[in-house]
Image (cartoon, rainbow, N blue to C red; front, side, top):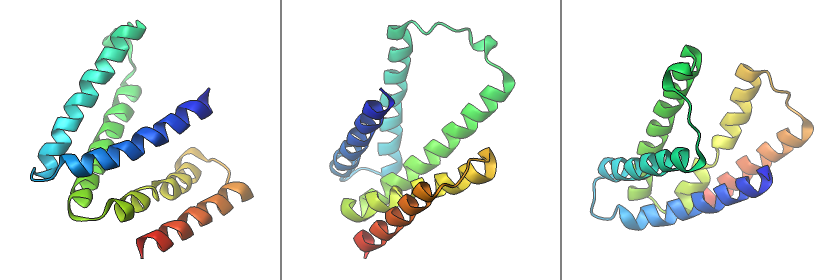
Length: 137
């Protein structure tokens, strides 16, 4: 199931790039990000309601709150940068560079989560880096 969800995530991420590029024409990229964020917020709250995920906010640990807030700040910074890059650059160049987040994720997972760098992950990361370089030139 995780593979299907990951593939759907990739398809929706691709649609995000195309739809955002068209959607931010003539609009400040920060305003576009704010509108997109509102939509995501209401969609996420709707999913919590529809799935019946009823947990009291006070039951969530302080550590969880801190890391979810930090994750949200990182997401917001990423989206602001991404929308501005889309507004001034070609999607075919911006999107691949954005996907180098995979390489940064591998490195940070090794440093902070002590995940092992396998040969498969190293080769895959190198291929992503090479492909990004080819597409961005």
